[in-house]
Length: 389
Image 1 (tube, rainbow, N blue to C red):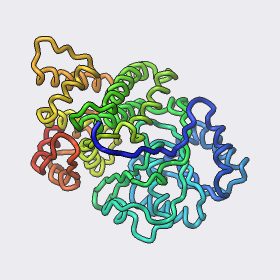
Image 2: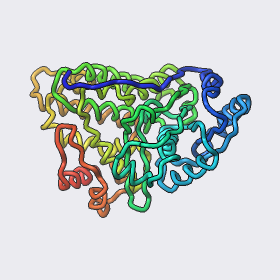
Image 3: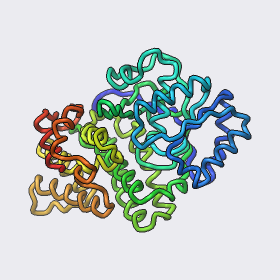
Image 4: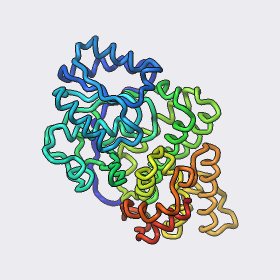
């Protein structure tokens, strides 16, 4: 492995069935005022809302709610949440939902006591918090983002159509605890389940497709990718298979808790392309990634040929006999595309509502990254979007 790094992850995880009871161990560590954050209301239908409220009441907490957090949390919603949390003098932000709810809670956390405009400070200037943070705890109901064990947050500015993520350097932004019960994911619609599955896979790819050295992180990544593919095929056929759904939930956490990024430059260009599409269409995050991935990877394959060959052999079991390195690498992407068809994820941006007239605008809000095998120029970005139509 090359380079120097430090690694610390302070998030405490509770994994498995009946883990919601561990809220009783965590809540006494914080003050009386809890802000309960959740999404569109599905947790009220499946009983999770009532179970959480009961535990909060048993722990004598004074509770305010932020409801209606959308799949792509907006800046307007962030401002709303900051005001609620300030007025409540929040001691803990309890996010119950998927990655967007967790992302949103972290954005509120770093903004409550911030004197600057959070959009400008965190998502335009990418500064670190220099104010008091309010701790975040998560109860996860959808897997994919890994937000339950990292310091990342993504917010969409609807006025400018910018969807921007900030991975904070401060470990204090990471959730203090996260509760992961695979059964909470069973009621997700198929579309959301497979969107989350592809999100997991692409998180690993973004870190894997960088560097040329012999790196332990890449061996871990290959194992995680194989696990995602194996468990996804079971879950698609039987969404109630606890073992498959638990493996997906655990893999999602390890895909983006910073472990496999160690010693890596990392790419993240698929996310920049996908987030641009999300800013214009409000499409599900995982689907924006699946819609642009193949065009992007085929574009950069010649620049990272050795890694794409390794990906083909070690993840997709592509035979090397009688083939050139380029043929092996291309077969790997074909195998990946075949798996994406099995999942039923979107493979073009047209299905998400994008069109030719948007390409210039999409390029305008796409942030070029330089950690992968090719730094894209504007013309290449437009061409990849065009190939993704």
